[in-house]
Length: 115
Image (tube, rainbow, N blue to C red; front, side, top):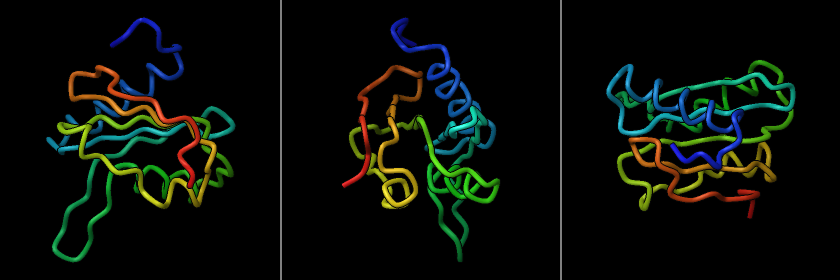
């Protein structure tokens, strides 16, 4: 993981990697809300339900009463194919999004993921 990531953002990458690794998912995500609480998730793929890891982390934050996401990190096998979910722009369009490879290497930072 690059040394230039602030500690609070590096924590998001670590949480996203952990969520991904626990179930062997293709993608893991973590989100930090305006109070500093964090939410992490992995992709959910069932016959009748598919949620990306970031969508699930957003849903957890909303269900917990969060109003804004300060930052989020996504760790994936294929960062080039990652598409920012509409739910992030709807929930918190100014969120800093950090997209990483599976090993935690930062591939890109998207400041304000809204339209």
